Image 1 (cartoon, rainbow, N blue to C red):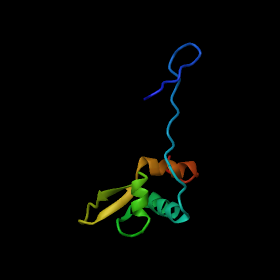
Image 2: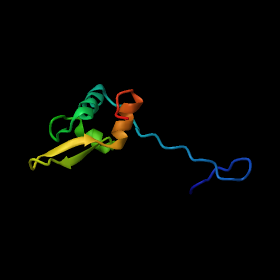
Image 3: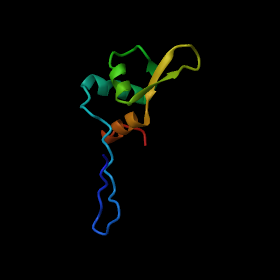
Image 4: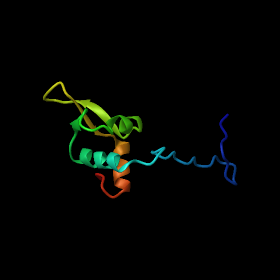
Length: 89
């Protein structure tokens, strides 16, 4: 069942945006996001990659020069870094 909040004048109230993260990131995960800020890395380079993918902060892309898969930040991952003062504008 979905409930829609109403303002005083009867118009639908603006819904709160869901937060990006459902849990706190470890210092290893934050360090991996910072590495990805500067360049994609090999998909198997860091053990934190699966957890970051599950959280939607990184994504797998095909490398242009080889068959190797690379990991890069998603817009959500970049938003986390921007919130910490590190992300791209």
